[in-house]
Length: 426
Image 1 (tube, rainbow, N blue to C red):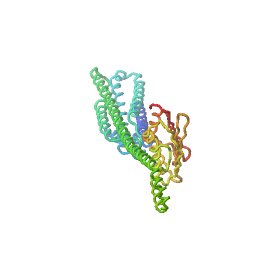
Image 2 (image 1 turned 90 degrees about the vertical axis):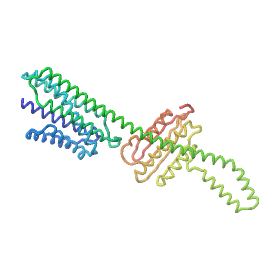
Image 3 (image 1 turned 30 degrees about the horizontal axis):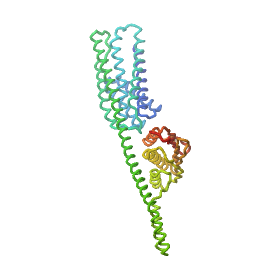
Image 4 (image 1 turned 120 degrees about the horizontal axis):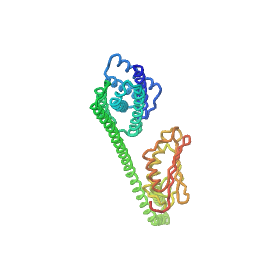
């Protein structure tokens, strides 16, 4: 039996070590390496031998193991301090809780099989059930709480306190009620172990409820950030629309008065006042220049937006071949969403690429659909992850029964936006 117990202890220790490392790796989004496994398994094995030789308490041994797992997560995988602590505590809590649940079943049933060869098979089955339960709990925890460096995890350290409480409560149950194996068990003891099993199941449910609440907290922060971004974009786009309307009124007034200006200029020329005529003509040219746009798309809002965005980036060559149809069927606010976000992303990509920087904007009508294409230079690497800007563009495209396509070829990035411009209610 001693050899069999040694085999079970070694199997349990190795299994826990592998599960701990895989859980921490997947939870934090960091890749694990073979040396991490080797180092952690060595720590577990060495600590197990020291604990047996010196008769150390189980609580102290687990505390040292948690510290070792934290060290590998923090310094080996490069995770943040709070994330490393939480991942280590959760890894041990789930494994100890699974171990406690199986212990409750063993303590209530297995004394009846003492002296029976069937006990060995039952112990192996219990070990297998422990691994299944542990993996299932880890999988559920990963579903409820998973993050990477780019995702928002505000106040992540707050989860450490309930995690430590759950772990401490489970360790107290294990080392106060399952520190020895009773060869004979009464009906009262069976009831007590059943109660402990229920308490541990409730502890597991409490953990999942805590992680579920935290996930929704993170989603609330993300929604709030997206709302703030949309609010800022809306305010900026209102400014573009207001300025476009002002430019339109000024142009309309200038066109209304142009006949009077030409009459005055004609009178000056007929009177032979050439110097006054030249001065007056310069004034007309200045007024006309102030009302003109560097890019002519057929939409004053888009013209102003292009002029302002591209005018601030003298180091980036811009080529605009775009003529929006009239009537366009697309609200000016939605056009601002597309062009503002696409240009912001293109300008940021150009500035991070180095070398030649180019932005090309093209538009082509095909029946009731209009295709906008934004091309810009970018750095080497995979396609960028979808941020708030691209999400806003997709939302507008879906509103107009269109689609968005992104592709990358070498150092060029292409964003194509297909829109239905037919006059209908959206």
